[in-house]
Amino acid sequence: QVQLVESGGGPVQAGGSLRLSCVASGRTFRTWWVMGWFRRAPGNERELVASITSTGGTTTYVDSVKGRFTISRDNTKNTVYLQMNSLKPEDTAVYSCVTGPSSSSWTSWGQGTQVTVSS
Image (cartoon, rainbow, N blue to C red; front, side, top):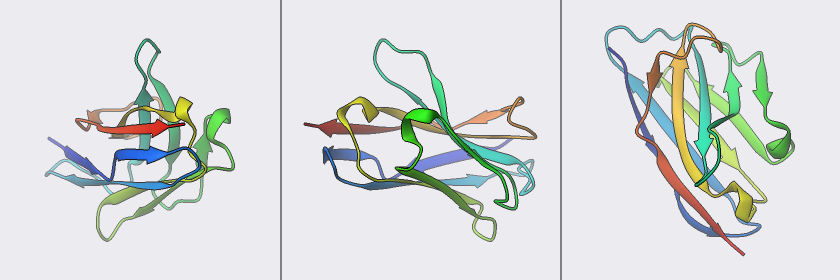
């Protein structure tokens, strides 16, 4: 069983920045697993915002956040981060941390943290 606990969300004005953090724990968590962030805005489908492989060698981003968001991880702390810059109102959503053996096999989800961007 894996537990994922997110932090760092909150209200921010357009153009501002936030950094989300997610700490993984549990006996079955593996540092070689892929980690990522999903988000869901009201009325929208859930979408994968970013993902990162165990060594950080490969990262992926949804087109709408490229150049503004950066995903990183610290395997010594079992933590994944999402640095969000130049935030826009359309980035408003609940952001959830995920992990699993691959990006096509997400097995654990966090509760989510709300990000609200005001114009």
